[in-house]
Length: 329
Image (tube, rainbow, N blue to C red; front, side, top):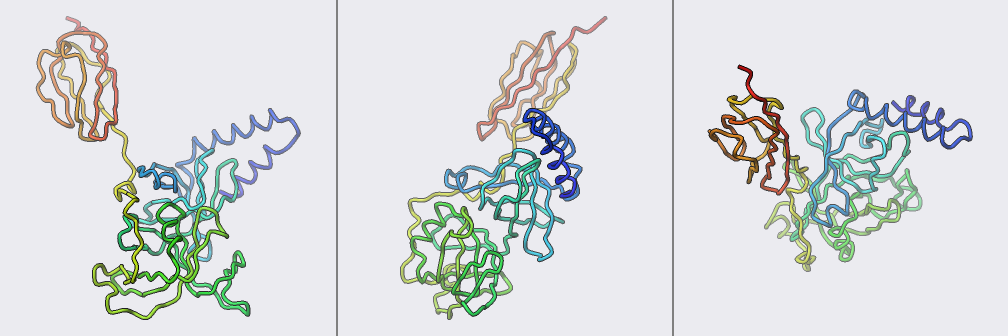
């Protein structure tokens, strides 16, 4: 896919005529949009950036094409044309029936389709009293004569273990209080206690790099929660709120029925989500046979153009127009 994309970039860059270049780029983007779902590695995903998390918004749907770098932990993620994502954005997707999360690291190229480098999150950082669990990528640096160095960015660190997490209002609160703060990472197979030694966003704007040292266990570690480490002074998150359900995208409400009916036919409409309210002209019906949270059904009494509006439990609305014709005798 990258060679195909590079050829497009070379073609649209030829010449000095700006309008011709714009036309070629538009044609390239239209081609990608039409064929995006046919590209190898295509997946349906959702995403959450820092602004969405800070505003307690729900995840939004996203079409992606994903591939794995040879190192095994980096992902290359491409999106539809003009879909720009911020560094630190979380991407939620499913691969081979396994739910995964990636964190956007940096933009590789923006045209004709935006392509990003990302890390696959291998851990979740859970902090006492924090309503937001941090998906994070954990990485072990290598030693050098100057200390520990991230060989990709030559970022000098003083600890062997690092976490990459999104920079949002929750992680900023951690950053304000990180000195010596103890955390636990792991899963059902085992956990390890760490102490945070450094935390900053110098390398990648939109992400914090958290440096860790293995810490001796305290007898109160994991008592309240197996992923909560003991700290003499806990961080106050009481003024910050987050609904964990927002990590799942809100599916749009859809209402489905035939478009054309005849007087005397039985009309039936199905909703994809629970409906709080149906709005329609009742004079179109001889009788309403069924009106529930997901179904509207009745015998049609007159011809004309009927509009039905449904409102779901999350105040999303959907509208459909139906044409009712006279029955020919």
